[in-house]
Image (cartoon, rainbow, N blue to C red; front, side):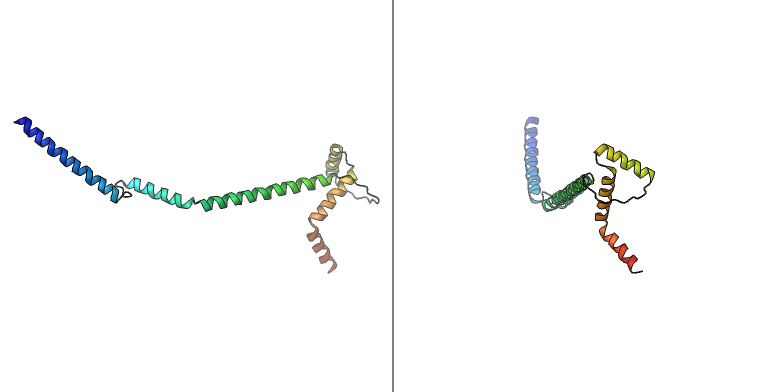
Length: 149
């Protein structure tokens, strides 16, 4: 008798377990995004925000901006090297005048001349010409201001 009761009880228990399992699956199918753990819910929301923030358009735009910035930097570096090389360009200077420079500047110019093989007066002329070209607008404005006084 005890065996039969246990068997019937076990059958009912298994039937109830099956029924509960079906209800749980139906609930999961109806509301797959609902979580009972608040920490998990917050993590999922945070992940959703991250997914929205990292859109392909934003990534592509950032890559384009970075590539443009790198090209600008490369161009600046190339221009800088070109300007530097122009300082050591040998040239014939027909008419010369004397100017006084500090001993420190003279030493720097002399070291540069020894290293490059270009004479000091040519180096000084090239450096000054490069400065005149670079600051032409400012120099012209200063000259114009002086002339209007």
